[in-house]
Length: 568
Image (tube, rainbow, N blue to C red):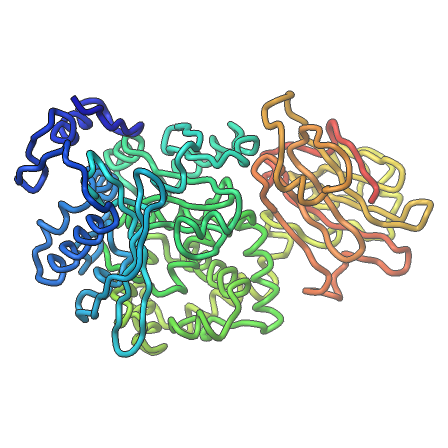
């Protein structure tokens, strides 16, 4: 009897139902209902694979979708369908990245090209899709069961031997080099993020239960090159719509999780969404890779204020991708989406999101006037009013004023930079927050003073004896082995001190300040004097820096408690 091919993610019942035909004997019926002699070995596996792929191509192009669908392995079919997300006009979701399916309405000319064995089980075959003189190259991965070739996902081959872990909502596949960075705190943060989006996006409880049961496949890769081996593109992270998998070299990668959760909320939707909303929503909810929304949206406000970008330049699809660099367009669109949600509500934004989705041609052809009209309809007001509300609150300065308690702000608020008397006594009349609160706590160490007042941490530092003003404050130390290593810490201190388990780091000099979470390798907040040279951040008269940030950014963990200071 042939051995059974076991898959770690399937239940025993499902495995038996789907693979019994591959394991019950020398002669059996396959999923096509045809007789297959499983003991007979193909003369050439590559020839057999190409023959199967050609048959698959012919079936798709002739419209025989059900028969074509059966060329995918039962395991791949399950994974593609498990979350119930569908896309308009896509006949075979597992293959939506291929020009064969993605461009099927245009009937591209498909040619099979060279392919070969990857190992004793897997093959990689290549097709070229030609449409209007343009050629798209695509690789199919094939896995052989009992010498019969089945289409499958590239991650099945690339991630063989990777460690697998599960959490409430995720099934992690971890590249061997990344195992030390996959700490429990990071994994828990992803589960909490999914819970929060379930509430924010009003996803029904039964759908959330389905997500917990079926789980999100998360492939934690070593670097962009390993991501490229799976996805074909060298990017930090990628949400693969075909398999509902996250393939990324960042952990956590909230941005890509946000993409999946928005699609999971809609369940059925067009394939392409206007990037102003698609990327703006994911940035507003999850930041980008290792940068939190608080860091990116704070920067975006300065970019708008300096007129580096405006909303009009982000409206049309092609302009978003070609006229503005992604480091600017993602943050700027995220802040605009944040303003829409704050003022008009998530339901209005999701309504516009869906209407501003379609196939690639439809979204590409949307004019700025079309887009403005759709926003007006869902927000119930004029485009001019939408922009005026956005600029008044998020661009003019109120976003960074005393009323805003989210992001890093330069200066000490109600306490003048030169008022050193207010920094030497607990409970002094000087109140950095400007809200009349008593100064509850303060701490002075050498050339550094920290004040905790009204839910914020105020920092003031002067140069050390050597005239240097460059410092890192480590704080929030956790018990040993909670997270033994931090990828971000290793990047920042390649030749410096050993990692000692401090979760947070506050780094600053006369030019910039940054707040970091080493457990999740995330930048939480950032201030650059280049964005606002006239800010009260640096006082050239006495060479001091001063700024503040809310305790909420660090889950109320204060640097006034156990901390370690490193002068750089």
